[in-house]
Length: 152
Image (tube, rainbow, N blue to C red):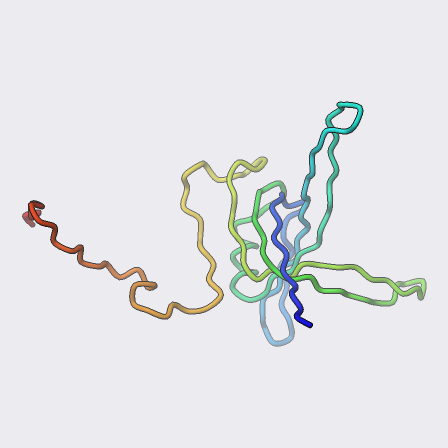
């Protein structure tokens, strides 16, 4: 039987990211995400439901998220679900799901502090580029019949 654990969410941060480090000096950031769902009920009234999700990112992604994100900003998060369990202060067994961020994209149009439209956002990659084209090296265009040469 095949298994698949992938989550894609778009929402706004519910709090500023909290950066910390593991004993191995790997950066870790935790933040909350609010995802809204709107629909029209049977009575014709507009309704809204909000789902709050805890998210965690590691390494360079954690540092970038901590640097550029703040409460209210919009983000697209791609990752996997992780189930955490622990013992509460009262001795009871506690648990929750969280999203471990594997990729993300900053979104404009959020609340206060959102970047202006058209502003370049850092891109995240999971793996290093495999070909020179992936490094952004300029490629010479093919010469078209009748195209003028640019003198410089």
